[in-house]
Length: 444
Picture 1 (tube, one colour):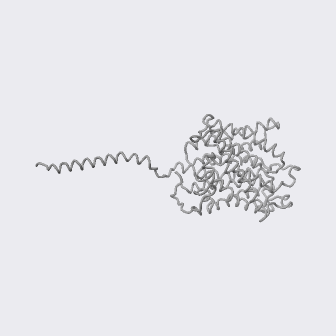
Picture 2 (cartoon, rainbow, N blue to C red; picture 1 turned 60 degrees about the horizontal axis):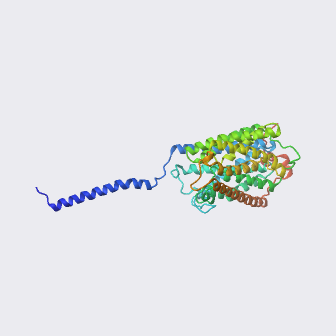
């Protein structure tokens, strides 16, 4: 049967149109796939690593920091420092859930986020932050917030009221730590937009804590008998154990800050190993040359100085740069705690400013230089040079020093007016353990 010409023409037109639409779909499909960002998906490897990292940073607090600080104080104050570290960390963990996380890690202004996630509203077990559950990210950042004020208490150990320590740290986390963390690590933060390099907390944790500690020890005053009688550590063995736990835990601190089990975590782990080793050698060598003997106290202090210095740099510098950074930090921090502190005569009991403050400043500035590809680093953003990045690092350091210096002074004064800062002379002489907590670390 002969087909109608009009019908044949219509069929050819429909067939051509259909093929054209199919061709357009096949061509458009890849283009749409390239432009549309895939939704985030859970990565079990990343999640497992971050769960471990959370536990490692918790180990840095208890028992790591507690034993390190506890061994450095006199025996009559051993339990008081353990109690301060434990309770301060616990208070911060609770307020992190109430309002800390949302103010630090939700979008907002240059210093604070909003209240959209207060009490962790809107977060469920299925909510993701990148490739990990958001609850895991909340926990990881919570451990950072918890350890930072715990570091501060070492600067005025053996003489501050327990109630004053707790109240100050609660206020300090709220008005100092949170805005600095938001500024550096949240996309709407001022220093984040400026392009500051701080991989794991050189500014947020160490400069922040070191400067606050310096302000505290100056405002509270020296321990009774400081400079006139010996106040040696009561157990360097415990401090050695604490320092070792800090070093192990610091891999969660630094390598965990990659927020994934990938190349950046591997680099951060490598640099954390060798920077610490370099600092131990640097401190021990200079102490050997100047004092005639390398001490265990010096070696563990050097270890912490190296860990502090590499914290902002861990994911940005290469292994050789990390060794150099750690070695220099060991030497500089040694001179600061043995010469500069003595020259000015202030009583930073456990050298919080001399190690964390100075080490953090060296690390933050050194990151700007050692991130250069010519020195083995990962490089800078497009259009950024070593000089311009170094200037940004200077701005980040200056902002943190000013923020925590001025803010901490105001908060110490406020706490002094409310509960008083310092214990009385009799309590200090008898020891904070028995007077403030009714216990003794050791019984003869």
